[in-house]
Length: 121
Length: 92
Image 1: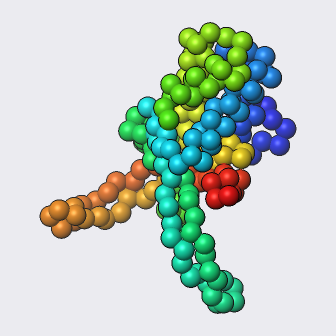
Image 2: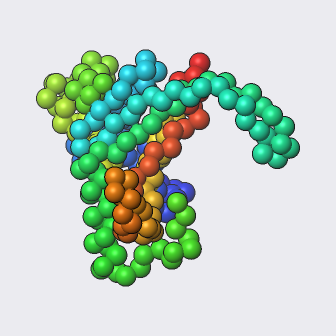
């Protein structure tokens, strides 16, 4: 993973493709087709309104939102917001624990957690 | 949809390998994503969305059943922010 203008602490789809290609000794073009197919499949499934469940990773489902009257935050003008569908991701138990435990271990090792003020959430 | 359906799609649409190999490849894709997130890095999939890890401070919560106050420890959580492209695709 050696992208040219790589943002710190961030992995893009092309980084993911490169890693998958290297791990499996696949040509990069092939790995690209595969990774794209994975996400295209998930998008198609969500479009149909289906729920996706990837064990050990998490699940995606579509949430339906009703129309409501919102406001332009700058001008205060009322705006009609149409009903919409949004994907919602729920992290799986295994990954949830792995992400959190890795953070706990790291904190005790290098004692450099983010300062309380900067950790927005 | 489950992982098995994704494997089936990769097998049929990309082709060039056995079903067993397709399964191994899809597994590797998700393993790589998980390893990245475990390191505390975010994953940006253009056209789909971003998986972001966020550090949460400890806070005081309440047991909703008993009303008892409890401290929720500091933790790291994973969130998904769908891309505008995906949001549009779901609403057309």
